[in-house]
Length: 338
Image (tube, rainbow, N blue to C red; front, side, top):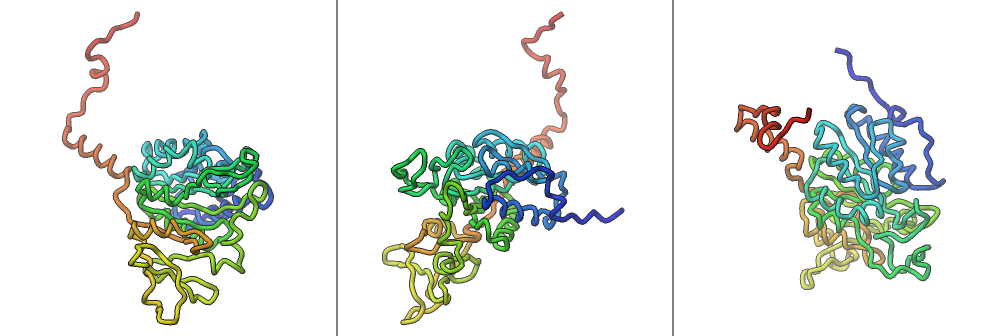
């Protein structure tokens, strides 16, 4: 038997013209995914990208794999059907903060709580880009847009908080232009047996430009970004001289400076299996705290796909004499039309 052909990024690049605005963060995410695909060892014919509606949802057109461009907010439901119909397929869901958390919020909740074995990538630019810049469920208070010219008064959702609340077993966050970090987070998400949720901070240069500059700018990133590593203390800062520890008296996190009686051993050590810690981390926002990126929570349980097929096999094994489908269809009140 001949060895399988070694694929490259070009093998996952379709012949379609990429139609995003110049400078859009979607380009960087697309490149990261196309680069990662050959390394996963999954045949192209077994890879499926499913999207809803929005700028991010053009993604399937640009991947040289199978794909579905579905309707607004329903990508998780369609993806669930694809995975259950053929569990051998490697299914990825591409969505945005509006598509996935507004009209699609209910569908997102259930694909995560069911733990369907697929990867959900949510591009969060805190705005509706495709429909010309209305505020979205993740837009910050005060966001000025065509739908909120005087500034939004809505309290925003945090995608990772929503995912944890839906009982997702894998929750992570990365940044569009951080190729190395994003690639490793996606690799971890793919390795998880169950629903994997990845929020990606993504820049919209037209309607919400620079919204994440505070965490992307190399000059400020070390002060505003907390890079999570399992088993490592929560350290950040330009000189790695700051950390996060637990204020036990008030049961809350606090930022401290190392020295003056505070040692590295006093800091919280990241445990990605600890859901209470994950919930506290996702609540951290600048300027009071650095914002965590990396795998926030990973505590796998059996996937919905495996459970469902296991149940089906158990039922079949308990009833070795399968019924005659034709006889079943003609049982009871039936009639023949001449």
